[in-house]
Image (tube, rainbow, N blue to C red; front, side, top):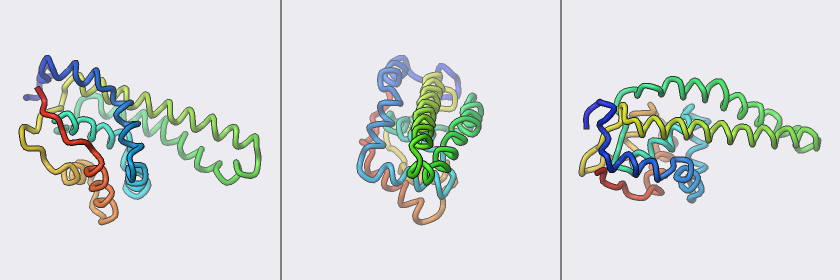
Length: 178
């Protein structure tokens, strides 16, 4: 495949559209060890969990990102300006919410808003992938997911590399793009 936006095959586009990133992310996140691995990468290395799950979804479909796809900067801006502040506020209120019912209610609303913002992010990432810009097949022999992600996300610490390995072991084998 090349960098042309029409590079995704006519059969791969509908397959990506049918396998909703949101559903994939929920299923993968629920697998043993994945939530802890994602949160470790988020909290220790500043990795965006939605983008991380997107890379796993692409990998599952035999695809990977090269360069910086057009639109990714805007998605990252959304995360930085909307999702991250909601998460920070929710976390800030955690202790007080244990003591005060009203604060607990506010915190619950923030949690729902944060989840809605993450869902929007995943929707945008899926659309980006379906357009095919910067998305390429890795061919018949898949690269090591943990190594690919470590390089892509600039992760180097042993605990973070271990978290990536956890994701790799919990992910179903990649399917060959058609």
